[in-house]
Image (cartoon, rainbow, N blue to C red; front, side, top):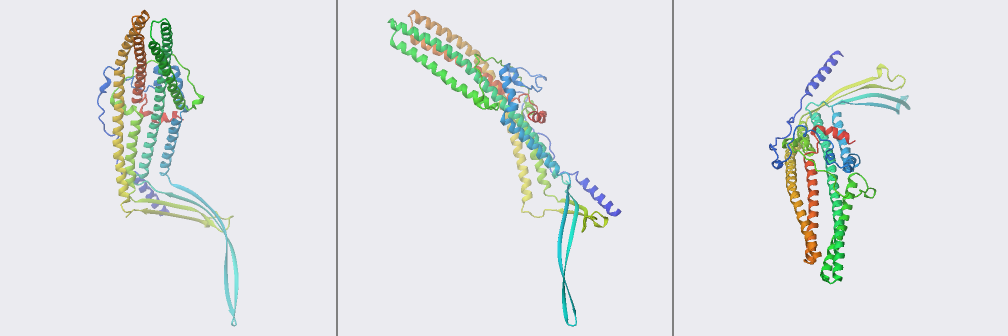
Length: 489
């Protein structure tokens, strides 16, 4: 007995030592990527300092719009896409726990009770005659057995599976952060576009009032024989065109209001946003930082890097499948015919066993599986690098857009001023009888176009500003992957 115990302990010691091995490549970190030393389009932008590069939290509060703040604060709680990603994160966590369970032995209890009858025949003979005696016996059988089984992780297959699942959980957490950032940024863009439409409606209301006065003046002059019927028709056309534009803005505003409702998890019928006469938000400065910072600040890049780590671990899983698998099993318990003395020492039973399984021929299945895992790893590396390049492009695009739109806004403001002066001059000349209404209509149309273009440029600047913040990660950090997921619960 002592010898058997010693042998068993030695076996477990050897197995424990072997479980320290793990075949397959160890993960060396994110693939190397030349992101550059500075953003090409960042000339003239605010230089980032260490404080700027810290997580910015509620980045939307930098616009100083309380209505926007209230709307975006709801996204994390009520947006259904965010809830979907949060559930996927919990699913990934559970999958990780499933993988970790393979480290441990399985233990089961088997209780049984049966009753059976058997028949026997006895033949005896005397003096040339035979007698057959039939006998039946009823027997009870009871059992209580504890069964254990364990497959030691000798080649690190389970460890690699756990690595893969942990990397996947972190990738899903980054995807959750990306979904939240995307919903917040989309809402901000829709909100600013809606507010610019409100400003355009105010502009068109003022324009329609002015055109109505011009039409009344022209009709009076026509009655006095000063102008022709063509001037009246021109004034009417101008007024009706402006009124049609008012109607078109109403449709665009309604669609944006519906989109915002969906982003905060409400039915469009249950949400409305009162009109605001002007865009109250302010345009904040956004420090771009360094291209290398982007690798830690964008959720999609962090997710792509974790996908590389997962694929690397899966190569180890496929490699471990080519090695022999050891299974240790044991059972112990009691088995007897009477329940009352089932647990007496004579009824005790036990067994110990070990099994070794080595694949010999499977038609190239295992080798193909390893090649598939390696190819998947190579694909995720390429996808990671492409994601980084795409992120760099988004930052450069929006840095360029903000710089160019700032110059355009300044030029457009001058154009509005010049158009207003021209319209005022033409109208005064028309009232004095030294110009036709065609001149008035032309200059007023130019003024309205310049004013609407100025508002459009303003909206595009806000959109580019939001997209730049989104491209920079919205103040998120890769170290926040688990924090983001927890906060969304």
